[in-house]
Length: 123
Image (cartoon, rainbow, N blue to C red; front, top):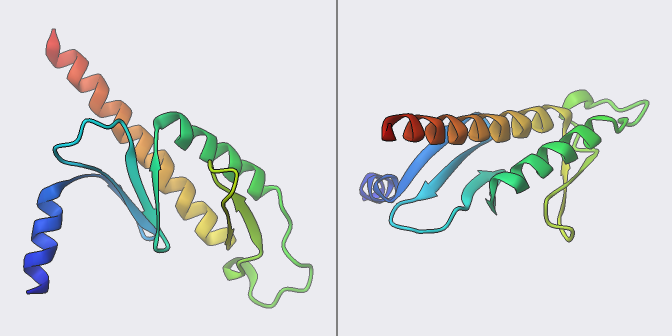
């Protein structure tokens, strides 16, 4: 039963990029230009410009310092990551921050590559 649900969901989306922390995709049969980006049980519907802004917020978060005597190290969720929404911030670890950055960069790369190939194939 669960595998049938999984197959149905996979048929309803077009996966763009995936890594250890999450996945990005677009829904089939939709006219929106939003990409679904999901990590840590949180989903964002983002335009390309919002993903770029999110990447800028990640750069800002990388400048934050962790607690001096933190025993957890890079797994400590002491970094505050602002999101493209002014009302949402996330507590993340340095490791998660890198994985989220990779997810967004990989998503943007794939979207732009796909758009480039579509333009080339028109000619």
